[in-house]
Length: 321
Length: 75
Image (cartoon, rainbow over all chains, first blue to last red; front, top):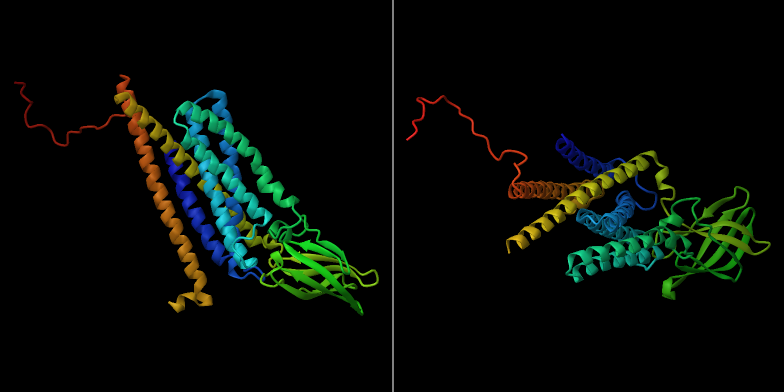
């Protein structure tokens, strides 16, 4: 009965993810300014979340192994860590494709990209550690301890580090309104950082209710500079002109401006802001999270079974020799 | 070839590629899963036999499909 239910569950995962793939292309609307390329978000974010889940499961089984000492727990911990690594790689690759579309480059050493790269290195070191120790019991104990320490870095590297950084282009700040994306208050002549772009407020000019700001924008590494003109309507409290940063699809927004005091509030605005406000997009996104979670548990169980079989065969070989 | 990259068609092509990749992964995973389960059961059965226990399930059953013409003679 349990086996039959398992088969049904696996088939359901197959059909479910196929449905998500179809919905990703045909059901959800295009994101403003991003075209079809923005659809990759439906895969990118869920794979990152599932990676966190996988590393959590790995840490739980590592702790259980240290407590109970059952080899099966080590197999489960390793299986979860390997799957977490795989899903992190998927999140990284899909994020790189997205960043190429939005930022104009695949890799920008953005805090989010850097932190996920460090996380990949930490878990790659776990696999290197395992393969470097021949004695089975020692290998299991050490990797369980290492896995627990590695897990401590996961919340920091996934959630904290990219958010405490002022200089990030990752959509945490730019896409989701109301998140930690306060923008930058500048006075005329002053310099600041928006994302990874250096900006300098050159001048403010008032014509009726509309205030226009001249802003000098520099590429990372100061490879090129451009002067952008953004404007803001004081009467309606709305942005009027939002020029694009050179080479990217991000826009410079003038959120508030006071020509009398020479101060302005600048922000970086991404096309597709509030993308999950669309009901169809949100449902497809949540379905994707559910589908990838199911896929993870399936892959986790298959890999753990294979590790158990591998161990049993090694034992049999040893007994015969 | 260029027809496949036209705006109206490209999205269906991309969807077909994504679905094909997923179907490939799914079939591969299904087969690996079935083989791993079979190996696991085989090892469990072998272990049970080695420990002198009865296997959890018989390996084969013999069913007589037609009645014997005569009783077998013991020589």
